[in-house]
Image (cartoon, rainbow, N blue to C red; front, side):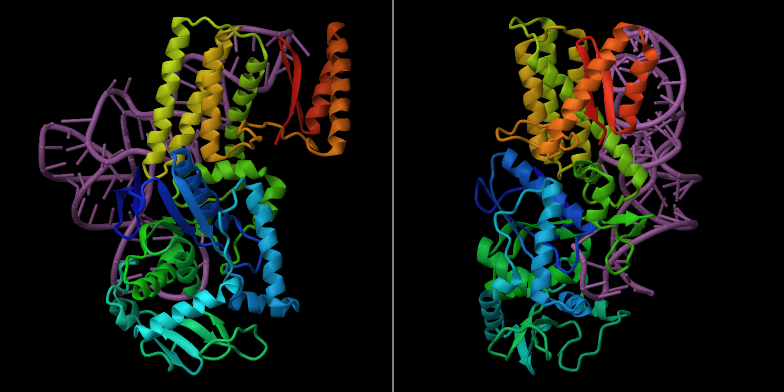
Length: 484
RNA sequence: GGCGGCAUACCCAAGUGGCUAAGGGGACGGUCUGCAAAACCGUUAUGCGGGAGUUCGAAUCUCCCUGCCGCCUCCA
């Protein structure tokens, strides 16, 4: 397996720190608003990375933090007249609603800054003791001159960064590029006691402190958006390596941006779409499919038409899954023909191709194409065979389940089996009634069809279609599904 | 100003030296159907922004040009 490492700008063979185990840390959101679709990309992508590593048999420890105290939260809280910590607690809960909808599995640990003050203060102390940081008037700054490797991730030297860059003038800093580890509290702000007076952590120190606590030094994978390379991750490296004297991270992974009209989407530009709003229009799993349809390091333009196109693609997979499901419930045979054996061989190839795609720096777009080839293989097989071979069916269905275990494009049941029920109110009590009514209409329509009363039959079909219910007539009778 | 990225069909998109340039959407034709839908079969880039070069051979490497974007400041 190869991973593109931002640190070396090359694909490198993946060798974890400890055989069979992978430690990964992904920068989570600052909880001052609902997440936007740009935040959703790393979420979904790194969730997929984790799933694939698990598929490969690794024991993965996945940590994703919440930045639940910072300037933006304080400002937002002031605007809303709400307590900052209450506000961030609320948005943490909202975050999980969106992430759950996108089929993102919970991290093993979701540390919060406010719950790790001791660890953060301890790390700042170490940095001061080692001469890598200095305290001024209740602030503490990291001294970048103490860390010669500063700039190695973003490939910039401090001199280059100063030339032409607008750096705020802060007379308390020794060097304009020095950054805050601890910020003295201003009146009315939430604060925590520290050896330097009441205050709160700077933005970068939390990730160093919390990753060190849960994953230790030199952990395997650190992920986040490309815009975090500088300064956030550069600063994390400086802090962590200055403190431990060991390499901070083995593989740095950064996802590309989501754009709107080819322009970067961000909270600061104000051209962002909240996941919450996007999900009013699209199924969350369609959004997930869309996010995985492009390689993670490429930009991805968000556009309703493109998401709809992705939705129709996913529908194709769903139809195939439905056909396979029906075949599993239907007649099967146990003897094998040459055709069956060819099919099995082809399926084995598809698994290898899928793994090859994911092994190559998590090429989800290519992996998806093998899902489609699987669908075509399955469909054409089922088209030809009225009583398909049990072993072939099992293999098809197992392969679909495995691919889905990695990509998470469909909900799964307790045994990891794919659950297609995305019908209106399928899991609500009212859904029972809806389903019964539809079944009743289908019976009426079948009676009309038997009498060749096509007008009535078509009226029922068209009417239901208008309500988002698609009817398909098959040799085994009609079936229906909701159009997502 | 400094640093970096991208440009593949109508749309999305994989492919970084070598069989006929994946896959999806769309469109068109066929099979199936009462008609549809779904599914299946077929068609849809002699060409990969433009130009020059390296090579037996390039979408893939080099140079130039054009266009778009990002980072250097909070940002996934």
